[in-house]
Length: 84
Image (tube, rainbow, N blue to C red; front, side):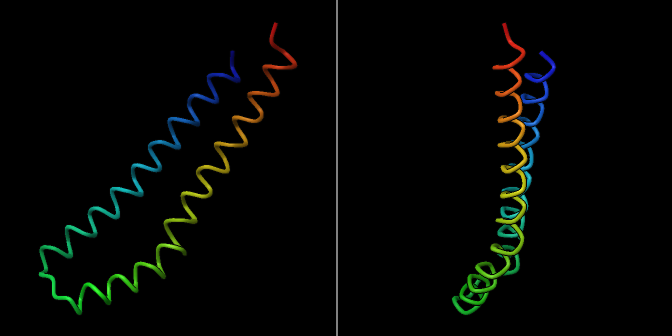
């Protein structure tokens, strides 16, 4: 039962982490809209986003889901060996 609770808590944490990453991106886009958009600014931001997204957002999301995958694996193994 403890393993299932740990799996659920980790899944919720992964969901919240994903939401926070998305919220950061949305907040940044709203900031850009408030400052005013020109096609040149949009192109520069697009190029910058491609570079920083791979370094920052993808890395955070990858770690979130690697940890989630490991917890699910351990919970599954625990259920197989200790479950009735």
